[in-house]
Length: 172
Image (cartoon, rainbow, N blue to C red; front, side, top):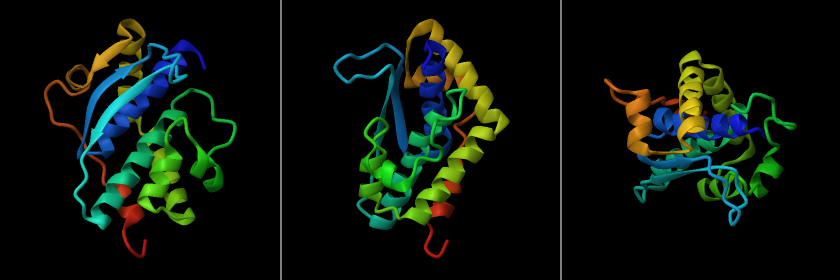
């Protein structure tokens, strides 16, 4: 992945957090390579959980959408998109396996979440915010959550999509 590709990837994760995960707090995003973690960039998010299995499953589903969003922003379609459910269960780079296991997501729900991530990545406002943040990351390398918020939403609150709730609702 190119340097700008890394910026797009991390920016998409951040924009997805701000749009999909209203109970999560973006703390930091960086595109400074980390040789210990073997990553070209990373995002740090604090997610709040309630202890209610149904509500926490929804919050975890939203985290899965966030994890998938980074792949879609890289400019080139990933070799295998969406990641097969079995592959996703063992995927370590984006912690998909851990999130799927914790949320107890089944194959049909996982594929609904992939569809939500794809729809999100096609949204013109999402793409514009992602590109704006990627440019800022390319220049600054590291931004705090507050700096990301100020850059993307200087005069309004954070938008939030409820699509992930629909994908995890009973009977959906």
